[in-house]
Image 1 (cartoon, rainbow, N blue to C red):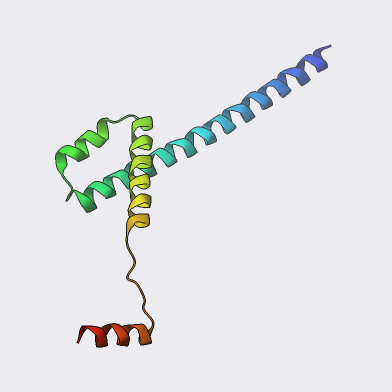
Image 2: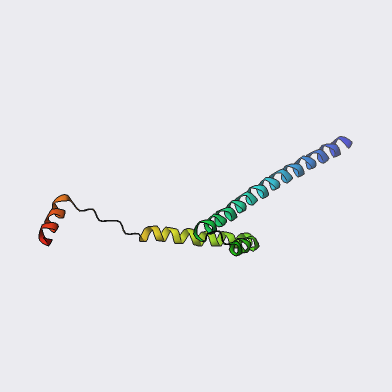
Length: 104
């Protein structure tokens, strides 16, 4: 009977320890991702807003969800900007010559 209780207690300690390890790892990686997002947002402020101190302080007060939402908005804006950029048309040489001949 004591042997069974000892085995059950040992298994429960091992399972609790494993749960604690997994929980700590998940929390660590989540914090790492959030810190990377905050750093990315601060880089945007540094690059596009010349490192405005008031905005940097404001970023420090934002919640994790708000930081994530702001980054999603900024990334969406950048994607749309890239799509809207007009590429320089490439004309074949003979068309270019015809156009210049017509103009001159």
